Length: 249
Image (tube, rainbow, N blue to C red; front, side, top):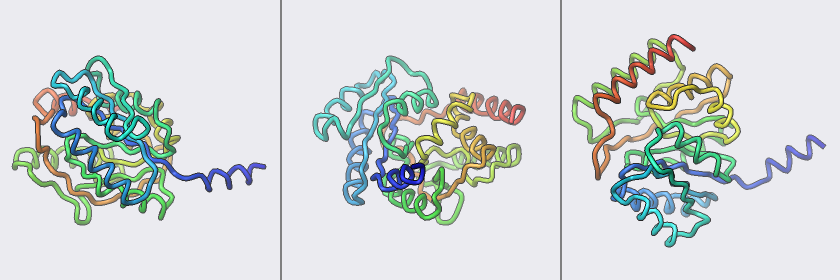
């Protein structure tokens, strides 16, 4: 019976739930949704896009509601919250409403291009990986549109992270990934971080639990519209979180 159950599970068509947290992304949201729909339509994969807006004052939710009318509520799933509660909790909230057996997390500001998603899926199937992570620091991956200061901050943060935590992944601070849903659920239960180090802790916990991780080189492009959320307070929070992870893992 157990073998029959596994066989039925393997024959089920995979579905990919994209978690898209937003805060003041009114201009970017229609573009990223269109690119996602185009990518999934061309590749033939089943999907849904779960938009988790954190009370954006710029009207992002109203734009999301229009997109729901255009593409249908089966493809655009709105799960807004009343205020900004953090990236980690946004993923937890979105995952509770996901119907796919795979979860894709990415940014809504066009820095992560959906064209890489079919490659994530191919990589996952080739190695039967639990997680596939986009990397800016391997192969032909890279960062475009950043000034020298932001590139330096990113490189230094990744270097410090590699030295302190030795995660076995080339881009620990990235946030463009594909997870098996059940693996993501288990990792979220293990993680204590909810802010800017949430993504790092996810990979660290995955290594501790012997989950398999594949990597796909990606091109990270600076946002087209709006302002970056990265500021002095966020850098301080990142460093505090990093030291906490170092002391507790």
